[in-house]
Image (cartoon, rainbow, N blue to C red; front, side, top):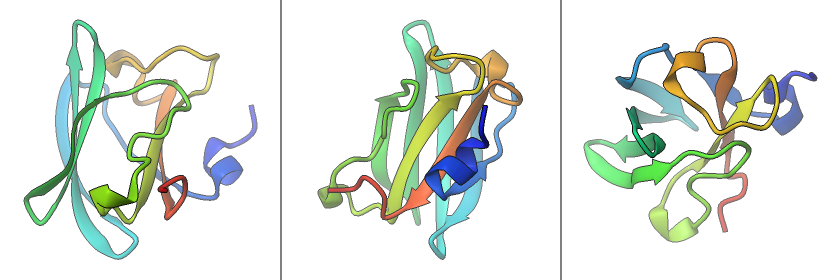
Length: 109
């Protein structure tokens, strides 16, 4: 498969194969916190800027943009991509199968 980061022109956010994780990243020059949690019903993502939630507990699907709306005031959008098919992400594949991609200003309406 072609490099998904190059495909979308974004950056890959490095995740670990852990069912619950939180990391700080700089996205479009802004310090953000990304929380990823595995639940029975799927993988969920929350996004914060300076402790203020932008997106809370959004269910992650393969190649589905997570932010989508400008009123959320995010600097861009995020999506997961399955490198081996079209399955929704699961924490066990976050280091090698499922990648989280950020694209500045992309897909935010």
